[in-house]
Amino acid sequence: MHHRTVGELMTRPVVQAPRDMPFKELVQLLTEHDVTAVPVVDGSGRPVGVVSEGDLLRKSSGQADPSGLLPVPHLEAWERAKAQGASAEELMSAPAVCARPEWTVVEAARVMSDGNIKRLPVVDETGKLLGIISRGDLLRVFLRHDDAIRDEIERDLLRRTLRLAPSAVTVDVREGEVTLDGSVEARSLIPVIVRLCRGVDGVVSVTEHIAYGTDDTGGSAAAA
Image (cartoon, rainbow, N blue to C red; front, side, top):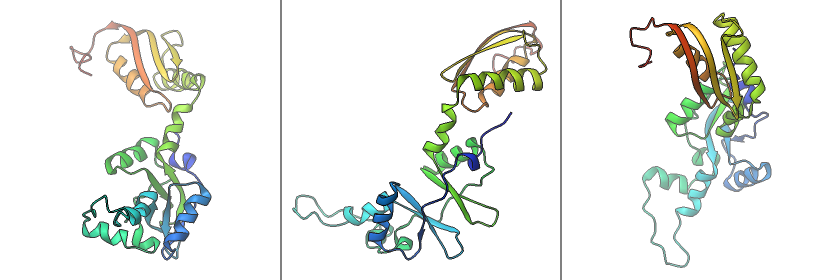
């Protein structure tokens, strides 16, 4: 089965900022390119951090309210340093958490989820910036057509991988939701089929109504 990679989904070329880019130029850069964040790169084109709208907004949120209605916010030392920052290097979130182009959607999604990160610069084996991948880019796999999902499950998974006859299991896909019907020889094969189907790009859920000829699980299939 072919899984779409970060390299296929990432955005390129990448809007980027040098370390010494001033605050106002950063605001202008985000506005002109209609992006919410940019990687900050060193002189060799390697990401050293990411500066986002949130980083830039600390400049305003850290100031006293002109009307005097709001109290001056308490800031941690690192927040105060960012609020007082004037260049990309002083304002960015660092170090940059990066992805590789050969990563699968699952690998990138886990890194984003674990680190509560919205985007990852993508780098080559030398650490140089190739592109950038966002949460929205990863979600594009779920725009895959139902027919393509069904064909991959039937052709690559059921027939080529599991060597099942075309009539053994039928596949219906609607809005990425897969329904499996049919029968197989051994009960232990059913959770394997379901697990493999869930790994197909674009699959939202899998429901199975598969009968079996022989129970070779000793009762373990239900747990699986």
